[in-house]
Length: 171
Length: 140
Image (cartoon, rainbow over all chains, first blue to last red; front, side, top):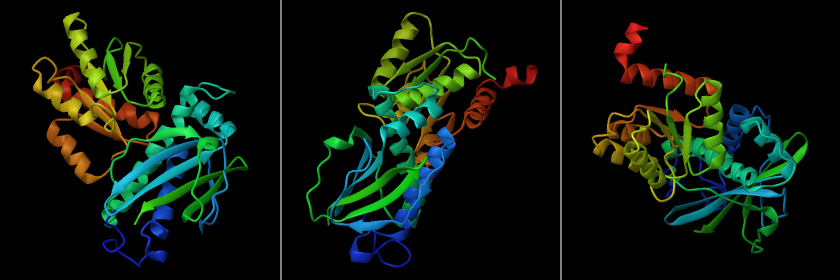
């Protein structure tokens, strides 16, 4: 994203183009639309915040790494496994109670769709989010270097805590 | 609409999306469905089917995949006389105008933007059939 300067509207706080209200809305709406359309699952978003420490939320994570010099970053969607089982059953029609390769795969596709919706909304505004192949992982395998700002967008599904996390690696 | 015996090839690097598309096809009455996890494997599957004289009748492919993308697969199919007329639907999260124009120029039959529901896919498949087989449509 050669983003903030080109994007319309007010500049983002911290001169960080990602920490921007339009980005928060685009990713929140992207995930809401994806889960509603594909799984008929409702999402309740809370207020987004920037933090320098990250507390693990959920069990499974979908990851999109984006690059567009001079910026690069990662977008994670973290879900409790029980929520992923529910979403997977709604989408595919198969019931699981234990994590499997197939179920884990689904958070990658969910992340891909949410990112695609957000990218489609943001790039016409001057952002330059690139095409990226999603990855999946267990949230417990993730580690964070303290002191790096994270944009956290908390949300809940069926009362369970979930999170969108956005990190900028380079500025 | 495509006949019940239509042979579909679903191409997506994510098994979840392959299952979702397959589920919709099954609900529509199509059971002859084969899967591939990227464009390269899909093209090999298409060639293999031609050699066995069991050709596919429709491809439903993702765009953004490792090894060979959906748009690269589409171009390879268009460059092959035996595959060039095959209906090719892109089902993708790439919703920007530039992507749609690029796909149209490459000769895509239709374009489904993720997320989608079963009705959207059904409508697109009907449109694709009508576009590729207008005489059968009129006869029906």
